[in-house]
Image (cartoon, rainbow, N blue to C red):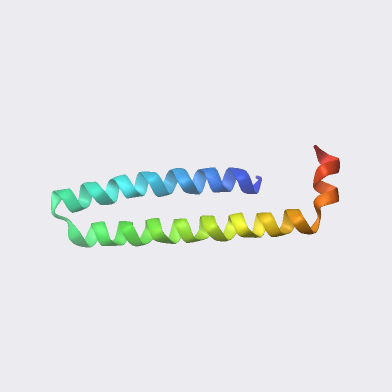
Length: 69
């Protein structure tokens, strides 16, 4: 599984959990909304970390990646 796929899946999960968090806050379930918001923030941080590592790895081994495409 490539890093790009992981980024897309994590982004989709983050969007879905954000929708659930908004629904929980609107329904009056503050605790569940806070937990889901924390989950969304964790996913967003992991997306940023994965994107930065992919960029660093790509720049380090640029010749290898150009040869594959």
